[in-house]
Every structure is written in C-alpha cells, then in structure tokens.
Length: 276
Image 1 (cartoon, helix red, strand yellow):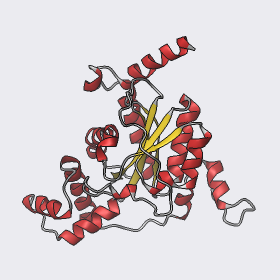
Image 2 (image 1 turned 30 degrees about the vertical axis):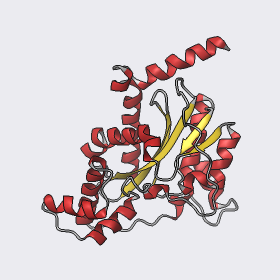
Image 3 (image 1 turned 135 degrees about the vertical axis):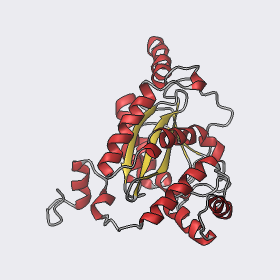
Image 4 (image 1 turned 60 degrees about the vertical axis):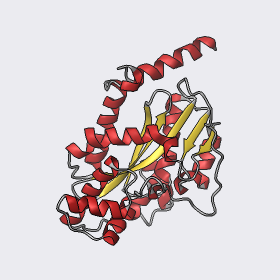
C-alpha cells in the first residue's frame, strides 16, 4: 500500500492509510521461542510483584525452575519496556530536552466524566514477538475512550488515540500522563493544546499517580492477553478491541458497586448536559 517513490511523502501516505509511520519501516526479526517464553514469565511476575527489579525477578524465576542471569533479565526488561515501580517503566523514559508539565491532580476531587483523562502504554506479548498498547482512560469512570496498538514506541499512536477520543467524546479539562518522551514530545503537546485541555504529568517515580491505568493493564492481561496467543498484529488489534468493548459495557467494577464504566461515564455526562 505504501509507495516509496510516490510524490506524497511516506509520512503523509501513512496518515491517509491510518497506520503508524513506524510500521512502514519496521522489519520483523525472528525471536527464539525460549526468549518469548521467558519474556512472558517476566511480564506475569512484573504484574504480581511490580516492585521487583532484575535481581528479584531472577530469583523468582529460579524458584520456578528457570535458570537465568540478572543481566539477561535486565536486558529483556528493557526490551519489554518495564522496570521496578520505584523507577518509572522504561516505556515512560523521559527525553532530556522535553518539557515536564506540573502535576495538576494533587488534592483535586475527580467526580465526573471528561474531567481528567489518563494515558499510558503497556507491553502486549504475542505468540511471536510483541506489540505496544496505549489507552485513553477517563479517570472518574475508568472507561477506555480510545486505544491504539503499535509495533513501535513512536509517539504517533499516542497522538492518534488522544485525537480519536477527543473527536468522539469531547475534550477533557486535564490530560494526565507520565513523563515519557511519547507524551512530552512536540506532537503530543500540540495535540493536547489543540483540543483545549491542560496537560499534567506524574511526578518522577510517582507510580501511584496512574494507578487506575495500571489496574486496567492487569485486567487486560489476565482476562484477555494471557488467555490467548495472538498470532499476528491484526489478531492482537481485534482481540484487544473486543475485550475493551466488553470492559466498558459489560464488565462490572467493584469500585463502582458492580456498575460498568459506561454506566458511570454516561451517568455523569447527563447532569452536565442538563446544566448547560
């Protein structure tokens, strides 16, 4: 579909096709089955013990009968984009030249839909390889307003997810993220400004700030991803889209007294419409 000798730049062709520019240049490399299995074990252990660094993960793996060195574990963690929670996940690596926005949620009562949105990225294992998932989460209702799956860590798919969410559901008052380069880069900052929202960033190492998104990732992985072995990127996209639709509309949440995110989201939008 992409013609490299076309008069339109590759970036513009990718935009018209609705795909990430990074996917145009991506060349998949084969990965050993044993490496993929080890990465899957590390991902599960990270969800269970998010405070564990490479040494503790090495020891936990050894207790499961898997002999592996700490350096190898650390290498795989970097590849997957995860680190112990006392240091922010590597998917959130700060760019030294990018601006850091002040945290705007301290002592803020978040009680209604579209008051605060949160964005985050997570690693999704497949049968062969992996992809990255970004989600736009309404903080008050826990509703996923948009998401994107990408094979690279470029900022494009984060911008696209935010743009879709704002186009479908209106702009929030605040967009909160971590300090990752995907969220502090010029493209994402410009998109937040374009939709008329205020940008907020978690403090360095303050993993609790985005705890609701972390809970979403746990649900996504244990209730969907780990039960399946996606054999392609398209299968991952389809499976994740179906699960997130279920998550929004049919999955009861304990924090909502058994109600769904859709019920909370649309329930708190209605009073705003009447007040207007």
